[in-house]
Length: 163
View 1 (spheres, rainbow, N blue to C red):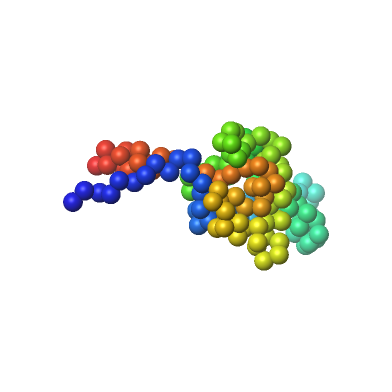
View 2: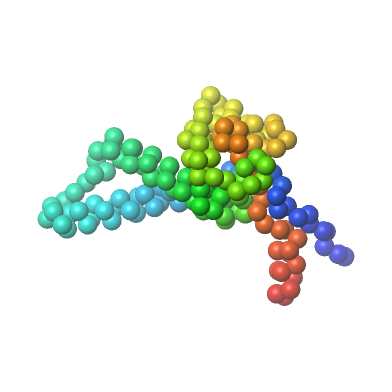
């Protein structure tokens, strides 16, 4: 019995499940880094000032700081490599709709318009399922697309070669 031939997925539009898994990984990583970083900063400030410092008690400051951190955590890696931590783990990359590298400006637009995709019952996200090019609302605004960034066939062959 021979193994089924897996197609090369590199460059094909990514579906909603892989994009959702990448997004969940990103959210968990962002929240964990924010919580750990905040705790460390409060501890250092407490040692320097000689008293307990609890910035986390100020919810407005915490929310603004979290939003700024989330923006940076999404926009910077997209601008530099076209992928976030979650996208790298799942094997996705964001490119321009014509396949070229995503520019910094388009990465910023994509991140700033991401909340619009979740507004009004996630209609912007539903576009991933409805459109042939699997582009969500924020992808349309940024003229971007999410594609698979790994060769499934080559990965399978490398796995078999290790056996």
